[in-house]
Image 1 (spheres, helix red, strand yellow):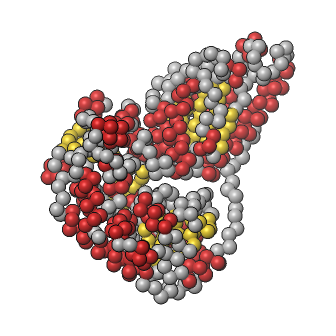
Image 2: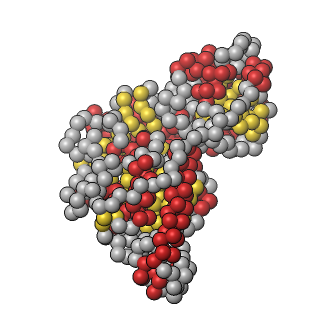
Image 3: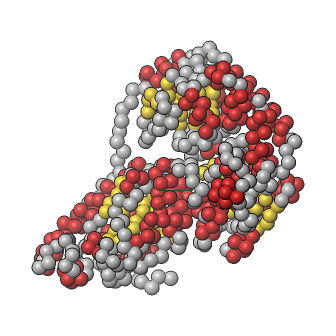
Length: 592
């Protein structure tokens, strides 16, 4: 229970203004990491019933937790920290938010400018620390009406003249307040409109804990208004109708981004092949959702095999694509034209980007298919599907022969996943193995693919799970899990949360890459071989734990793993470290 009366506010105008603007812009989820310099902000957020506040000590974990919340809310979530090195721990999540288009509002308390680089503790140069990876920033000006005596006594300050009168301070404060309100209004609007990270730096002077009953009312407020762009789509209709070999390649998309009518139109067009990934959240029996199972077997068959599937027109949707093989293929055998359909940005991933269509994909295809559209005569769909189906049949035969390994563990897991689930995947091996197996239609899939780092997978999953009613499963590798183990250090775990750890005693994916394996140098600095397990860690945080070492025990355990329980559950699967790479590589060889 708060020690402050309900209608009290920070006596520092700047702190009260920041809180007020978050309230006005409906940024109501606030993840706070404890500190002293951010006390006025914490007071304002926790003392207002319009905010839902969270307390997470580790700033790196806190930022990824907030990213998971924002991922599900599709609206900005704020993180609040004290001054100094605390702020720098947000950077991994800031960069992920930037490349994944997730609205994250970083609010950092700071010392006043003249207190930086003079030898005071927990002071660093905070403005511009995230600058290349922000949609916008507001580096606010400190108040001169608060702690005025302390301010005037400091010979280094340049905010006001040393002999400033009370009237001078009052006029300067009005000017500062107007400027800060305009900056806050602009930066928060950009977080909402651009769906990306912003940084608000808030310099605060002691005393920090004083309150007032006088509420500050901002004067400079505007609604976020998107720019309206007129796009002539008629030429796209003509090009679509004339292309005999079209590939639609879909990266990261939220569930329900494109309706079934559009998906069915794609599927029935003989000139179209749709390549999806698990993070595309698009499912249809005619889509190719194991891209590497199409491309990897062709790598041994020469250029003619790739020329057969080389498209005339490539249309890409969504965010980052996992498959390196499809990137290499399209860079070496480029389409004649490449359109990227995205209302915000387009990457020239395949080096031949010809058009960035700044529309939502649903809007684009609604228009495209509203025009007369006679499917062109083409055997592209049937030819590519024939190759793909043949590869999958060979792969299925191979899977029946393999020993217990990462590949077999993923096959067993995916065969046991409930029909309706919120699935979070860690990066590296996990997301790549996941591409090879089917999922039920109503499983929604998320992964931090913006920067593809392993550093915040668990924290993101915990935050996302807190805002979904569905049961959540996180599948992660051992290094990803242990790296982000502070994700366990909060009180926001739901009892229906499940974690599966594939523990192959190191960075197993490095065994697939070139290098002299099984040497002291390789084991220590590349694969990072270890003998850790999650049993004691799970126990210390009050989570249920079990482990398996074989396929039949895994099948048995999964029969009860998703059933209701009174606390979250962790299942650790131990696989043989030295065979996983051979089993996976032989899987693709078996398809040739």
